[in-house]
Image 1 (cartoon, helix red, strand yellow):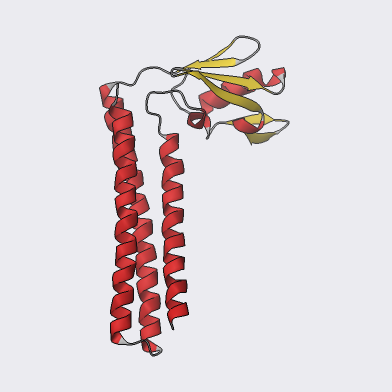
Image 2 (cartoon, one colour):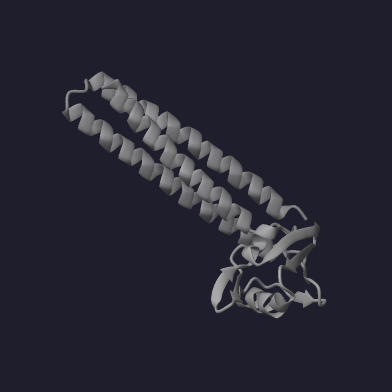
Length: 187
């Protein structure tokens, strides 16, 4: 029976780790006033008749804390890159110099910082829902094992272990969100 419990714990940890990975990728997309190539992750460009992610047709780099540089693999793509950035509705103003597309990242207003902070909290809550779902699945599996002969004490211990795992991942989410909020609110 212990192998089945270990499998249940591992499955719960894996699901919780996936929720953390997703949260991390979502938080990277929220800009904190500093230029980051991840800010353009949802930009797609028309490339030979199909919509292609920007990072597959150009190099995107942060020149400094306020400027992004986009160097297309083909110069003919400069206008398409500008269109793609406009269609992504990121509130950014690309400038084409004939070689590269430069984007100056404006400083965030206090109101915008508050909105981004709320967005980060919402992403954190979504991750916590994923973790709670993993906990529920693990506890359901423990109940099935209990019906198949697992003792009451072993089931209680297993549920306590799942709760400890859940609490640790919940604390990790809180720490990630706190760090992101500090990053957003820092002028």
